[in-house]
Amino acid sequence: MHKHDLVYLTEDASHDAAIEHINEEAFGPGRHTRAAARIREQGPHDPSLSFICTDDGETIASVRMTPVMAGAVKGHLLGPLAVRPSHKNMGIGRELVRIAVEAARRRGSEAVILVGDPPYYCPLGFEKVAYNALAFPGPVDPARVLVVPISEDTHQRLKGTIGWRE
Ligand SMILES: CC(C)(COP(=O)(O)OP(=O)(O)OC[C@H]1O[C@@H](n2cnc3c(N)ncnc32)[C@H](O)[C@@H]1OP(=O)(O)O)[C@@H](O)C(=O)NCCC(=O)NCCS
Image (cartoon, rainbow, N blue to C red; front, top):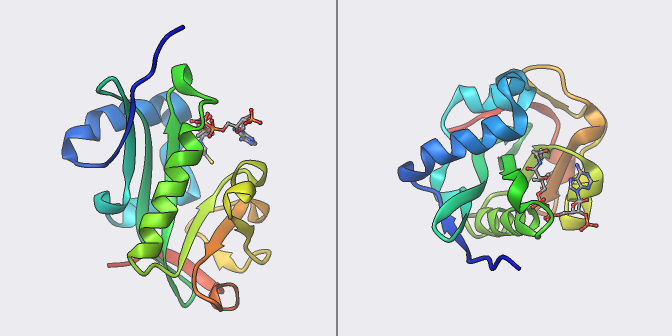
C-alpha cells in the first residue's frame, strides 16, 4: 500500500503554478466563466485564509477564499476547492473546507459562502441561502448557493448583491 505524507499549509505565491494546474485539471477551461469565478476576477483572493495540501512535498489540493460583501454581510467566498484525482476520497477536501471555515471564523468573518453541491457541503456546516436572496455577477443555480452563518443574524442580512470587497 502506498503511504501518504499529508501536510496542510497556508497558501503562498510559491504554490501558484501547482494550484493553477490542479484547478485546470478539475474544472477545465470553462472555469473562468462561472459566476463565482467572476467575483474572483473583481479582486484578489486572500492567501492568508487559503490552504493547500501536500503529499510528500507535492501540492495535491487547494482551497481559496476571497473577501466578499454579500448583501449586508462581510464574509468570504470559498472556492475553488479541488483535489487531484489521485487523492480523492481520502477526506482531504473535507479537511480543507474545515480549516478554511475555521480560519475565516477566527478572522472575524461573518459568513463563508459558496456555490456547490449541497450533499457534499451541508454535512460540513453549510446551509442553503434563501432562494434568490443573493444576486451574483452571472447566472447561478439558487439551490446551490450555500453559507456557513457565523454571526447570529447572517441569514437575515444575506440579501442583495454579492461582490468582492477590500
Ligand atoms: C469535490 C472534491 C473537492 C471532493 O474532494 P475529496 O477530497 O475527494 O472529498 P472527501 O474525501 O473529503 O469526501 C469524499 C466524499 O464526498 C463525496 N463527494 C464527492 N463529491 C461530491 C459531490 N459533488 N456531491 C456529493 N458528494 C460528493 C464522495 O462520494 C465521498 O463520499 P463518502 O465519504 O461517502 O465515500 C473533489 O472530488 C474534486 O476536486 N472534484 C472536482 C472539483 C469540484 O467539483 N470541486 C467542488 C466544486 S463545488
